[in-house]
Length: 105
Image (cartoon, rainbow, N blue to C red):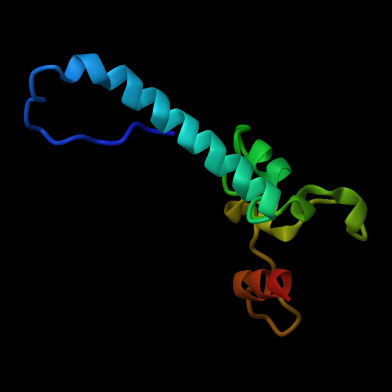
């Protein structure tokens, strides 16, 4: 996570003495908040782990990458690059909206 931005003003005298302690406390609070959210079910540890991998930054859920849950052993439609998402519907309309809507239901 990025560091918290501080004001542009020069810090007061003695700041360098307490800055490491404040940074350490900030890191500890983030870790405790992370663990609390996992324990209480507000966050999914496995999904967060996937977000840290390249290409999975915008993954909405783990089900989207599980090929065993689909009829043809493929990924969810939300994992298909937008450039390859164009599909012609039976009535002649092209259907990015239809495919996205189908994923939500």
